[in-house]
Length: 313
Ligand SMILES: NC(=O)c1ccc[n+]([C@@H]2O[C@H](COP(=O)([O-])OP(=O)(O)OC[C@H]3O[C@@H](n4cnc5c(N)ncnc54)[C@H](OP(=O)(O)O)[C@@H]3O)[C@@H](O)[C@H]2O)c1
Image (cartoon, rainbow, N blue to C red; front, side, top):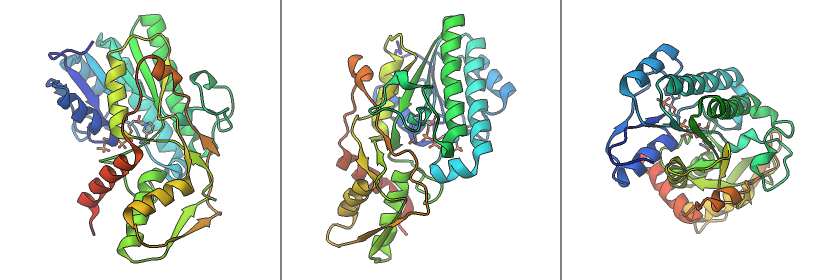
């Protein structure tokens, strides 16, 4: 159980999820938070990671450092996705074990589940079918991370927990049109339409693929909640349990950002749709007493304000 004196290391503290975990920990009154910039601690450097953890001996670790991106970058930079993710997680998990750190949270992703998975996706469907090709290297790395935590728990009696968040968005997201996830990229695209007074929005694919999204502060809340919770399962899904089509999300965001204008939605069908539907079964998280709290429209409003504060040009 984390207490006020616990030393807590957040790896990836500048990223979308890591920065939210740090904000959330501070809000809860935890002061002993350990972070290290990538320029000082490159987590792909095994020796440095081991030295850092042995020297600092945190009691708890949140692994929110990873190479992350949307369908375009996952597909284009397959080698970087598999190498960086395997290396970062191997380094931290193994060094945590060598440094006698018993508690950590590893973040996987809903991409670990098969492309044509039964919906809503239960944790037990892991490894029950073929993965989506565009992000297979990323998913394989994440599955290896899950199995690593599971194996260390079995052999070394550690308490390494794995959470599987659905598509996450919020302040500090990567809003790049090409390299980001669909949700922040949609926010940027729609903002550009507003700024340039355009009348058309072009979506990748046919717009019918269904996705579940969650606000990042809910993910951070889940990370801290489950760090403090005893459970026997290897993985727990973290989502809202609700999904909408990409087209529906586009309409919701258009209505919020450009309220009084009619914008025509067009589809670039030369671009992939990705997995047809992806919604998590969240019964297990609920059974342990956790559920998402932030309403979708409030989450979009907070995210758009963050986007404007960084990109108002
Ligand atoms: N975003 C989502 O929709 C989503 C959904 C499901 C699961 N997740 C999982 O949640 C975790 C966090 O994702 P995120 O969206 O917060 O990603 P993010 O915003 O890209 O943040 C990743 C962080 O990792 C750091 N990092 C990357 N390589 C590093 C290295 N070699 N050494 C040190 N630091 C390094 C980055 O530092 P720099 O910024 O300095 O490069 C960044 O701060 C990941 O495990 C991801 O798989 C995310």
